[in-house]
Structures are given as structure tokens and as C-alpha cells.
Length: 258
Image 1 (tube, one colour):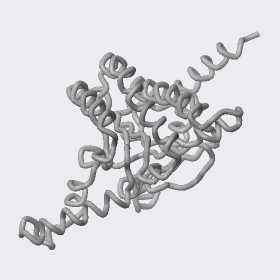
Image 2 (image 1 turned 135 degrees about the horizontal axis):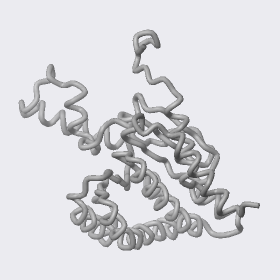
Image 3 (image 1 turned 120 degrees about the vertical axis):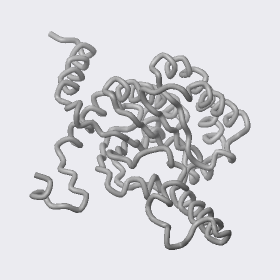
Image 4 (image 1 turned 180 degrees about the horizontal axis):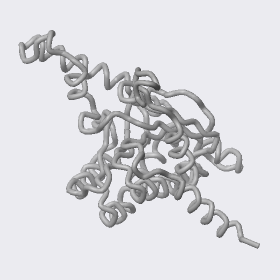
């Protein structure tokens, strides 16, 4: 009789073998939701859920790198999250610093480049300093780009983009007639990232929560009831397999694609 641990490894292998490596999503984005509910179910404070959620981050990053996913973006802290209780925000910032320090070796060993998007100037000085150091230390890595969305809100991003373009139009740097999607892309936080192919949200909630609204225009959306601390490589494989079953038409008909 297989032990649960062995059975899980076999299931992971079976799912992984069903993934078509030539049809991987180039860019996966994840709304990591459910830490608080996971902790509450166990009779613990919300911070306990956030702490255990870091292990799911590690597993997900490893799995994406192993498969050959080129870009992974994680929604780590939104602009709205600043409105949460001060103790929870303080815990999240502490976890961020400790995780960056702890995972720098893993990033280097796996040739993963770290990036960050959002209103980073609003982060505590200690967090901002640690973040900049890890980004600088991993800037030459090429296997995969891991992007953390921190103090990020898509509406704020789009608002800033409109303001920046407007100033350039006013100063005759950009002609209004020349403004197109590429111009807008160049002024987004994600200017160095491709559009999202697969957006995953955990915890059973089915909404976007102000995340990459422009960049997910043609993304495949995948919702799972699994709470983030319980999210494993197996769950990631399931999402990718579901993604590969879908027909991405980008406005065309099935006949045109065939």
C-alpha cells in the first residue's frame, strides 16, 4: 500500500507527464488568496496563514522553473492591502524581508531573475532596500523572471500611465496620433514583461481584484477552491493542463486557427 507522501509524488509525476512542454504558457500570473481563511480554519491568527503561504510560493517558483515557464508574476501585496490591520501589514512586510534573504540562494542556484512592480516607494525602507539588493544580485539570471507585485494596483498603474503619456504629449515628445498599444505598454510597470497567458486565483474567489487589468486582456482564467497555503505543484500542473485544453482564438474563429 502506498503511503500518502509516495502517492502524492506519483500523482505529481503523472500530471507533469501530461503537460505539453511545447505549449506552456509563457507568462503565468497568480493571485495568491486564502491565507487568512486557511489560518482561521485551523484556529490560528492570520499571520500563521501568511507564514505557511511562503512554502507554496517556493514550490510554485520551483515548478515553473523546472517546466520552463519564462515569466511568473505573483500578487504579493496590493495597494488596498495597506488598509488591513497594522499588525497584519507589519507581519507581511517582515515575512517579505525574511523570505528575500532566505531565498536569494535558491534564486541564484536556479538562475532566476527577481523583479518587482507597483508603487515601490511606499514600501518600508528596510523592505525596499532588501528588494533592490536581491533584484540587483539576480539581474543577470536568465532561466525565468519572477516578478513580485508589491503595493500594486492596476488602476493606479493605468492612471500613472495616462499621466506620463499626457505630459509627453503636452511637451511634444509624443504626438497624440502616435499613441497605440505599444506606447501604453512602454509606460506600464510591466513594460519588460509579455502579456499574461494564464491567470490563476486560489481560494474559490472568482474576481480579478485590480490585478494586471491591461495585461490579462486575452489571458485564460483559472479559479481553484484550494487555499493558497495548500497550493502544491500538483495544483499548478492541473491549471496548466486545463490551460492547454483551451482554444485561444484572440478574436478569430476556430476555422481560421485550423
